[in-house]
Amino acid sequence: MITKTFACPGCNTQISSQGNPGDKIRVVCPNCGKKGIAIFAVDKADLKTSTAPSSIEVADLTKKYKDLTAVDHLSFNVRTGEIFGLLGPNGAGKTTAIKAILGLIHTNSGKIKINGFDIKKEDIEARKSVGYLPERVAFYNNLTPLQTLHFFCELRGDDKSVAKPLISEVGLEGAINRKVGTFSKGMVQLLGVAQVRIGNPPVYILDEPMAGLDARWVKTIRERIKMLNKQGATILFSSHILSEVENICDRVAIIDKGKLIAEDTVANLNKYLRIKPRLEISIPGLSGRIPEVLKDLKDIEEVNAKGDKLFVTCESSVRSRVISMLEKTGLKIDNIKTIEPSLEEAFVKLISEDEGDA
Ligand SMILES: Nc1ncnc2c1ncn2[C@@H]1O[C@H](COP(=O)(O)OP(=O)(O)OP(=O)(O)O)[C@@H](O)[C@H]1O
Ligand SMILES: [Mg+2]
Image (tube, rainbow, N blue to C red; front, side, top):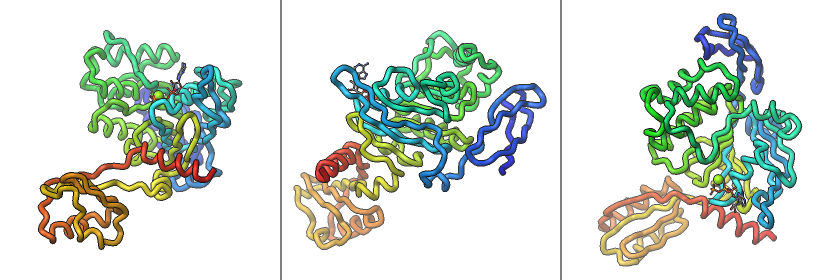
């Protein structure tokens, strides 16, 4: 049994509640009477067991658009308390799968549960348990963020007093009176993160929350997702960029052409796929020649040269040795870049392994 103390979002009174990891316990503020749910986070170590409870259950989901099978017998579970990445290239079926999970589109087959509620039979409870950030977030341009959140509170039948604290939580308090139409894409996305928090649902589904944002905003959104998770929320988010998810996801599912092709921790996938970052070393006058010294160096997986650029694939622990060997031979290094493995490389590898096994 864990004791959790938190501030009432309505009046800031400190409230204590007791529960076990994974529990969601109804609480009523003794001061203002506001009702809410205390979520007891699951220990990350427990998530590794396949018997850990699940907050999103997807079994045999299929969605066809005429002749096109957008989602093809897809099954995966998002365990309570984890951040789960749904990864796939453009057109893989991520948005279709998400809409089907939320019961927003008709499906050909599949059983979906959110927070234990069947999306078809207990749709109201299931939908109340989840905050959904769609792929294309759109707000009214002539409303301020405060008016926007008030509008969504009214739609959900929630108390408007949560709006201001939520705007502060995502760091938009400095823009509280500005019109949303003047916001940057990153700010709109942050407002989206605030909007999905209305009602304090235990589960969040975010469709490409970092798409089209620059590195600084990606970091900001990533921090918000991490913070939500730290507060006990379970998060499913989709992306087509491996590097966006690898630092924050407990597990990922990779889908391609609507089919699940891998589901594991990012670390295990990397180990399994053995896809490593590549070093791109610029050496003026290299002229496509691989330096002799690298030919004898163990632990290098692959080395290629093209023009003045040398491409070396090796473990990160070997990189500094590669550089010092090159320098010792008198080569002048102009620039060094790390090229992160792309999801496309992972797909090619996974798909060709699949075909090889068949
Ligand atoms: N309403 C629709 N009618 C017909 N085909 C559709 C419809 N919605 C999606 N599709 C098709 O289903 C496939 C999966 O699309 P989906 O939008 O789910 O992919 P995605 O993984 O979300 O892609 P992206 O990364 O570009 O957002 C695509 O081939 C798409 O063209
Ligand atoms: Mg999509």
